[in-house]
Length: 210
Image (spheres, rainbow, N blue to C red):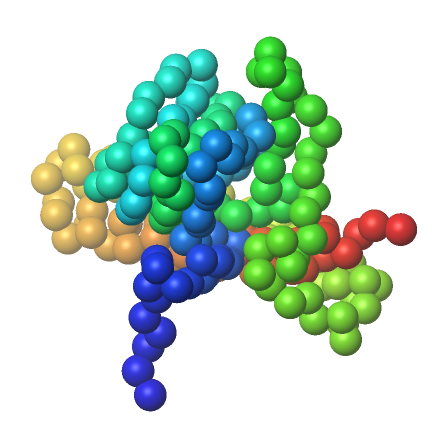
């Protein structure tokens, strides 16, 4: 069986939801708008597929049509409004996708309380067989692992960074490549641990309500 293929004319939903990225097709009707908000961690990319839309990003407004794209960077307040009499369909992605994913904004741009949306809001069915207590335990373990790996990584970066600097200054290509390899091999598990921590947090955060 092959890999999934998604079609913006029929798959109006989230198609990939991970801590690294959330991507979806979104359809909005004429006159519909989205509340001003921002993302504490995520850059958001919008690619218009059909219709016309007005974006306001960080106080600046532009009109976009099919084939055009814009980006709202981290902490940039943004909103969208459909123009004309036709529906608008877009592809969007937010990276990373870590709860709380949205920070509502007042019209003045002031930050409002975070929006901890449910997993189902992103077309993810929560695994309720795992208790909140177990998720908290996993969260603590993932945090401890990250702390340990980060400490080790910092030591390697310091030692190998000095060797890299010396190797580049002396023109020793082999030593420079070896130092870079060691720095990456220490850095890689840190990023893997960050991803694992994001997985657990995204499972825990939507359920952490009375």
